Length: 314
Image (cartoon, rainbow, N blue to C red; front, side, top):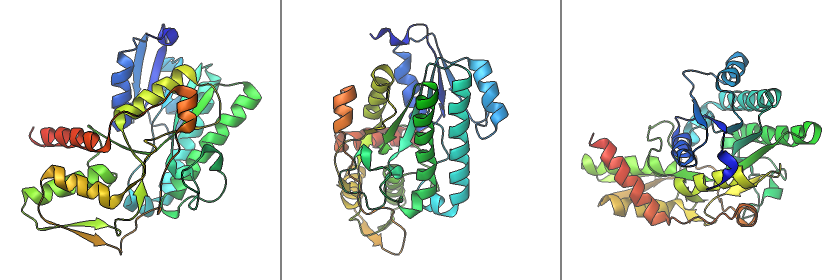
């Protein structure tokens, strides 16, 4: 076991969210001195006074900054100002106060939405600044670009150790299945399950099914985050993804089959679909942190569906 975690106080912002819960579980096995959860009900990270109080209360050596105002295409489109401001300000305040409190390291969680709309595939870390992000997610993506700039500038001026990891489309058990804010996999699982349960003969899916995404199982992502915390100390961001491109049509068909839904998929091309293609390179992650995702899409979706069906029966 790595000695990196010995006598470390660890804070996880967004620790009760999807990613934060899985990260907390994995970190427990590393036996740090203490793990503290930064939850919105206790600390509003948009409010600097709460951020100051969080650092005073928890006294972390290591901060995983997972907190964000997030959601799917629809809620992003309806709330561009909120998504920009809240993400930008909380990122600035978390990193700045970490510096003021002599935190040893901040691991900031970025998003594939930082990449330009017309970025060539696969997405490479050097391409982040080569254009404007896809419009539906641009405010969120730009806020994360600001976080990256913050990390770069504080390392250059203050030698402050802050890294940013660019995460792709996550999925897995404990995902957010709320109708208005869920992402692709969770939303489709819920939709197909409810259609089967209620004997609905058609399921509507946004777009034409040809858009692509890079879906990576949550446990693989968490393994990469922890490896980066232990081994990576550079402000150049690192992609964490599956490295595989999958169409929305393919993902819908996999979920339909595993749910045993025998109805029809209706593609609604009048609804927003986000970027046309997302295929993310993980070559840098392989080189720098020995990142190698293990869970196949079919296996990961099965685990997610099993968890969801179990939670529905409670």
